[in-house]
Each structure stands twice: as C-alpha cells, then as structure tokens.
Image: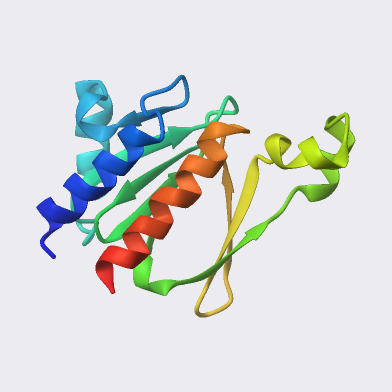
Length: 148
C-alpha cells in the first residue's frame, strides 16, 4: 500500500472511532505552527505521512505516521518505526484499580501504555483515559494490518 492509502484508511478508522475529540485530532486539522515544528523535527526521518495525534493533559503527545510513531515527553520528540514495535503492555493497572469504583471499570482509567520494541526497549506513552487510550490502540492495530 502507498502512504496515501495507509493515511486514508487510518484516518477513516480514526473518524469512525470519534476523532477529533478534546485530546485527539487528525494531523491535517492541527494548527500550522505545530505542523511546521513537527516537519522540522522529522525532516531527517522516514516518518512517512503524519495521520493522527493523541495528547494528554500532562503535555505529552503521540503522533501516528504511515511509517513511524513519534512521541513527545515534554523534553524531546522521539521516534520508533512501526516494524520495530513487538508488543504493547498496560503500565498502570494498579493505579487504574485505585481510581475505579469497581474492577470492571478500571480499564477506563488506563492512561499509560508501554510499547516494547524488538530490542526490548520500553517506550512509555501517556494517553487520555477512556476513548483516546482505546482509539490509539485500534489505530495501531490498523497500521500493523496495513503494513504487513
């Protein structure tokens, strides 16, 4: 598939899952200042086309591209290729259980998602709880399906 086809497919899925919301937006709808800054930061990369950004109240954000994932941790923008992501891991079950009134509702309090790379590096991502957390996971599943 071409980058344009991947972007169209993932964008369609994002919209079906309710993007945009308070903490998510399609890249093309973001302000020009962000787009220019990201373009400068990713100019040496093989990021592909930027698709959708998820943010968190703590200032962290994650941007899905057609070839790579970028994230900002309030200090630096970092990148990982989709093909280098081995698996996902929930990092905050204990905190979620403490916040939720029942164990069944705990999954709606999750905000920290770990990505484990093929070289066993842990990447910690912060996503707004509930819809944003699960929408991000579904977008990443779509990317993996499309690039294989």
